[in-house]
Image 1 (cartoon, rainbow, N blue to C red):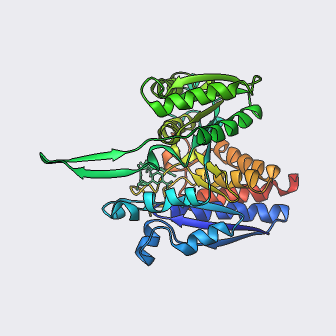
Image 2: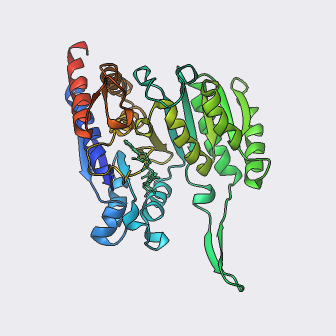
Image 3: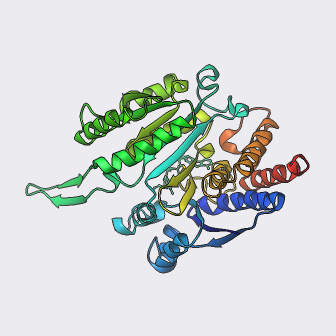
Length: 362
Ligand code: NAD
């Protein structure tokens, strides 16, 4: 029995999580595993119900589960709350911190069926298969934040960006181990020409590189990396970077896969890992059955792989998605001429059915 905490959250979160649960249940049926799901409130929905975006019971449930499946949180309704009660700052960041989730893995793989869905040229994105490893519990998002009135009027706002050697070593070693399981190429991304925290980052990576002579290590400034991702994404195997750079670069990288609705993520480091799509709550399409659930279903596949060591089962989910895309089914974000458009729940149904259909080939 695998105990999964299910936190749909806000916006499209409540539409995509049920689709990932369908896929996991289909896997359970097919392979004889029992997955139990306990749902809890998080984000704006939790604030509305109990006055805090991360209720103590939700955190407790996560701690006592084998893995956490999260939809997305936030939205305009909660944007004016005091900062500590806003869903992103009041729930997402403490959840990551409390569970010790310092490594965020975002695999960016182009499904061949989607090569025309991207806004980029086919010859540029064909064969893209890279992994971004983003540091998740340090840097600017967790540093001290303050506002001070200025004597002459107006205000001064400050966010502190700091990293310690320990935090850098921990994530970079993680990235080296990941590179060894892939093509042995690691690109460390920083802004060492301007930022002191980046200079420590680069020195630490340079030092650690000696321990991994079998891995080719390169350094790249973040501004150059954002350009190289579009110019020649196939040059990358594993990218390791700090929190905010990783946040921004992975939204950009998602377009290599056709849509942000295709980018899953796993947050790892503590005893319980958390799996969520890389995108947000998409308030502009929430409640319209238009959201692409595949990033969330792919995140469920990552859960099988990383939390439960069920590699074959993870591949069955990925294969089912391959199959459906090859058959021409698309959510609106991926729509092209000649394809069949489906809503969120119909896409989830098809994935679950494709998982079940492969039963005979077990
Ligand atoms: P977003 O990722 O929610 O949306 C950006 C664009 O991508 C929108 O046009 C949206 O419709 C589209 N999109 C996103 N996911 C999609 C999907 N699965 N299928 C189809 N289209 C999809 O980013 P945003 O608009 O900057 O943020 C909206 C809210 O989400 C904000 O409150 C933000 O703070 C929050 N947010 C939460 C998380 C999280 O929960 N981890 C991450 C990012 C943003």
